[in-house]
Image (cartoon, rainbow, N blue to C red; front, side, top):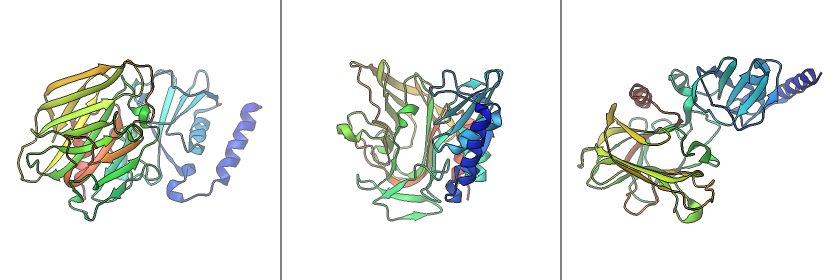
Length: 334
C-alpha cells in the first residue's frame, strides 16, 4: 500500500509541474551509466518497487543529478551530483540526469555524465552540462565573437564569474576530479591565471588556483575542505612556449585523489615538482569553493589572464588523453 500511495503522489506531482521547458526537470533526459558511485552514497535510501520509479523520483527533484537503484533491496538513491567510481556492482543500476536542453554533441562524449561545468565562450555563457544551473557572468568584458571567444584584459576587473555554492563536495581529498581550459594567448614573459575557486570569506587565504607560471609551467594548488591534508600543489615541466605570439592552447589537469597530472594540447606533460601540507586544525572549509573566477586568481604572483578565453570545464573522475581530445574537438567545433 505504501508503494502504491507513494507512486500515485509522484505521478500527481509530475502532472502538475509547469515551468520553463528548458529547465523543466519533468522532461529531463536520463543516460544509463556503465560506471557507478561507490557505497556508501551519502544520502538516505528511499524504497521503490522498480527502477523506473526511482528515475521518476530523481526527475521530480531539482537537486538530483543521478539515480541509483539496487534491485535486490529495492532501494532508491537520488544523488546531488554525478559521482564516478568503477564498474557497477551486480544489481546496481545508475542513470545520469541531463537537462532537456543538453546539446546533442555533448551527449556524444564518452564522459558526458562526468561533466559538472562546461563553458564554450565562443557561443555563450551557459553551462552546457546543464543550462539551468551555474550560468557564467561576464565581468569587465567588452569583446566576444564566435571564432576567438571572449577577450579578457589582463586586469583583476576583467574575468568570468560563476557562483558555485556547495562545490566543496567535488574537492574532498582522495576524490578524483579534472579541470580543462582552452584559450588563445601569448605568455609575454608573465604568468597567466586560468581560473580559481576563491575563498572570498577569508581574504583568499584558501583559494585553489590553476595557472601557468612565468616560465610556462602549468601549476595547480588545491585546498581540501576536510581530511588530514590541507592542500596539494603541483608544477609541470616547461610546457608553454614563452613569448608574445598568440597560440591556441588547451590544458587538462587530473587529480587522482593523491597527485596531479597535466595534459597539454593532446600530450601528457611530465611532473616537475609537487608537495602539500597536513591539516593542523580540525576546522572544516565548506565555503572555499563557492565562487569560481575564470581568468583571475586573486593571488600575488599570478597575473590575471590576458587573451581570448574559449572553454573551461570541471569534471568528476579523471580523463585520459583521448577524452581530453574529445573536449578540445568540442571546443573547436563551429
